[in-house]
Length: 99
Image (cartoon, rainbow, N blue to C red):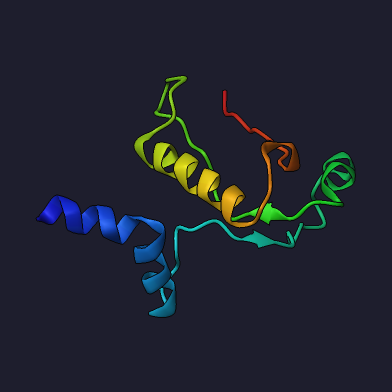
């Protein structure tokens, strides 16, 4: 029963309830990015015609595999694309890495 509850809370319907309750939902939203003045001009130019989705994909430390949250976020992204009648061609993925 606890597993079913957690699954419900983390899926789109449960996250909609989270949002309506005033908390931050994990469901992706497209937002206009607020770039700092120190953002490199090349990045600004590259992204000027795009909105940013409120999702980040992280990898397990020192690994090339997505962490558990990122695995769930991939499913959320797929649901977002279906809901918004978009395709993967509408996405631009930008990655950053540490050393």
